[in-house]
Image (cartoon, rainbow, N blue to C red; front, side, top):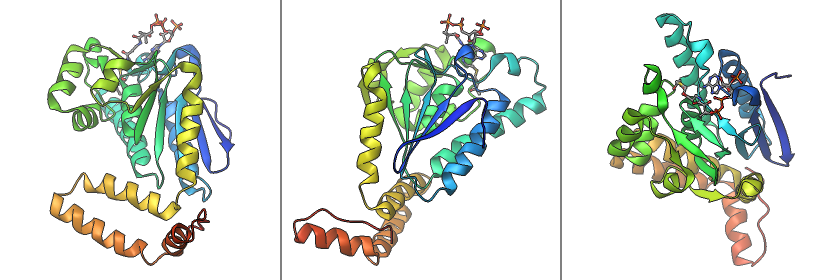
Length: 261
Ligand code: CAA
């Protein structure tokens, strides 16, 4: 499928790279961008070959500078609610992808852009990245899940600090508060993402998929039920060819050849 507002590439085997490509508007998420994002995520989700998805923004200045303010300025309450629900659908799809999704944040990740990064499994940022939820400047609140995902990741007090003041933080502070996993030079960002994706792609695919499933789903469960689910999945994985291959390879001191079975 052809997209106007994003590109979808396969830079190396097993890795998909999705770039929000609207640099003149700092990659702002318009209804069209969200629509294309939903359809691109559906196609990546269906691909049997993908082991990791990387998401970034086109241009040196921004990952995504937020939901499109010009588009939102004329929305009725009903349209705004629909827009928020569409954003939520995108973010949920990312969380439920059957492989890890890594945000490569280059520059501004504000509002909906910060929320997009938060919906990814983890974030690698360039040292010029800027994060924030500045919606209160516009008379609105975060609308793509920021009130929930930010507080779950960095804690209630820090989330409220960022959301209620609208203050923007640099990569270094984002690293300190646990919002991002790693900070690298801008010209290293894509390679860092590819290195992580290649490391994931070399592991047992079902084990990676189920590990993500356990962490994601477990967050909505109490500890006892989440651990019960983990024990079930552990048992299931012990029935796979990849478990036999992985353990045999270790004992025979050779690299494993996983088949995703
Ligand atoms: N929506 C629409 N257009 C945007 C945009 C956005 N979120 N962010 C930037 N742009 C556009 C600007 O209007 C400008 O377009 P023109 O050249 O046609 O005038 C272009 O991108 C470049 O932006 P600036 O000239 O403003 O660039 P700058 O370097 O001076 O400032 C910035 C960069 C600090 C990121 C600034 O653009 C900015 O503050 N953007 C808005 C950030 C924001 O408030 N985001 C939250 C949106 S609300 C939201 O996301 C709700 C939600 O949760 C769903």
